[in-house]
Length: 146
Length: 146
Image (cartoon, rainbow over all chains, first blue to last red; front, side, top):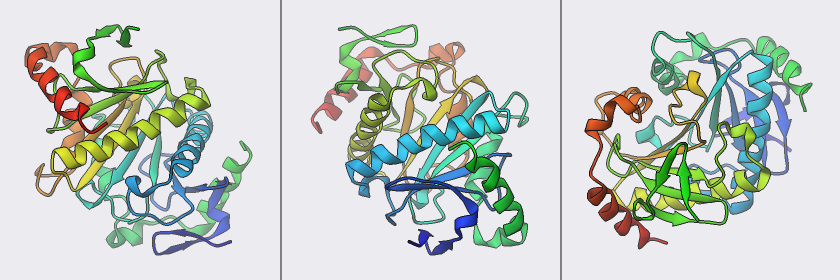
């Protein structure tokens, strides 16, 4: 079955975990190494649109993926965030949870991460995206944790 | 049963929803009107420390509380975030989900909200806390949604 992230058809090679109702993918423009996304398979715009089973599966998946990226990328903390709607910085109208491994001194100011997060998936930045090969290689590494 | 948020004993008057494994409380220093917190009742520091039933109950509660504060405070979007560990800005070592109703123009820059969020619960800011009466009045209003 094809996986969609908003209007974007997602290649299996850039995903690294799929559950009954959710999937995890690497980021085309990570804010920090290991910045990944977890989404419900069903394309819904807002968190409130998720069914109870989808909420449960989504955050069970977030917990598993968080542990994997924190370990794989040597983090000591995690930023876990949903920009739920355009006024919160959501640019892809499909619920997605940002997971970012954090470590001391990764940003001059902790909050700097969010300035970049807010802008990270804008179409205008497409020239800064990573290659599919680079993304597929990272996904292959993360797949080993599941 | 007493509710703890880290080392802080929480008065029932400032809480507005309690489920089997989670509870929601108003904020002593909200970043925006309607900035509330949802916590697991069990005091655990990191998201990875939660049992599957706690993760499911926590985010089911976040979904219910999000809908209520977005409606009550006239938001059009929501910022939902976990600062999971000190390097991510966590200052109270008890898992807590920040829920912030958002609207157009609430901040000059969307990300400004996180600068304040990062600092919002530091003890040094205690002189800026709201009164218990003000917090209890807000909790009473929100209790009506559940």
